[in-house]
Length: 256
Image 1 (cartoon, rainbow, N blue to C red):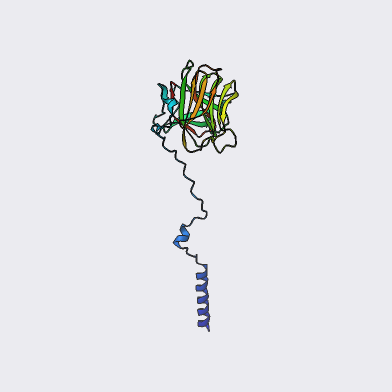
Image 2: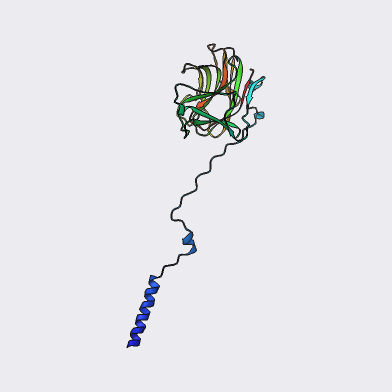
């Protein structure tokens, strides 16, 4: 009887030991994460700058070059000394527009605060002689996260002509506008109900002032024209908003 009880106790002890032993996991279970997060999408790459040899410059860029900048400095740097950054209106120091040169392009990089928060402030990058009168200003632009791009001509302080083109996914019309700006008040000289531009693509824009005639072109095709003799001379430049994500390249000012 004692032998039977001893055998039963041994069997029970063995069973308890087996049940209480930690369960082994398969190698697949050991490697599986508890939570799965998909990898972040890759940052979109900027397409190479197209060549002007395909005719996108148009005949309005065929004159003598007065100024040119392709922003080809290596690495990241501040904009060159020839340029002036102008914020339109009263802007707090931390909300001033930040522009930088990176990857061979001029970038409107949000605002000057530590976080670079975007602001809907109008901002200009201007260059040239205040005594310039008749010329063509042209540039490539590439919109990653902004809303509008444009060109400035005959700028004297708060007075200038502006060619403005607005992104196609921005809910306004018209999207192509030629206007005169005097002390922050814009007067439309000409507009056209046509598509603006697609983001994530390079576009060539130009603006010509010659006497009282003002014209603007997209990818070599003149899209708006007007006559106005209010402003006779001044600097040329680039326009956008301090939202960041706007690139410019190959800026030229030529005789018309």
